[in-house]
Amino acid sequence: MKRSTLAIILVFFLRFTLFAQADISELDNDFTEDDNNKTHSIFIWVPGVVTKGASLFINKDEEPDLKHTLRFLGGMRIRILEGNSNSVKWKRKTNRWERKVKRKNLDDLMVVKNADTVIHLKAGFPGNGKIRNYAFLINTDGTAVLLLGKSKLDLKKLVKLVEKFSS
Image (cartoon, rainbow, N blue to C red; front, side):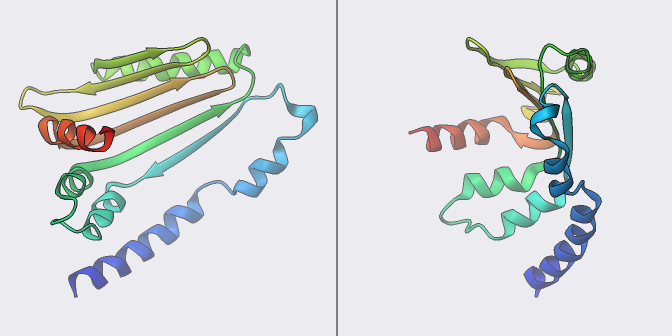
């Protein structure tokens, strides 16, 4: 009964959030061969209810760490920027994203630099061993992605989950 009620609420809630987003076909029509120098951005909001709802469908006996991670993962905002990385709009938006992450006082967990790709993983620890805020900033030659989120993740359980999936 609990799962069916939650499923009905999620379907009702997601129906309105998905229609509130931009129509993908319109975005595809805007980008043509003549407009390849333009910069396009997309914003996606994933509420924390979705991740908590997804954790209900994972078996606790088989995947306890994944279930815990999804249960305490909050909402996230994803921003995607595509276009010419040398344009003024691109630089203005990516600088704004970096300032937003800097204002949150997040600590660097990992920085990966390649020839044309830079990935920043940052997280905020209030002192109790739990990740409160996190940010991924991925910047490549033609695409930039910013993922900002809130959580109540236990760092030890997250490390255990990463070790399990990496081996």
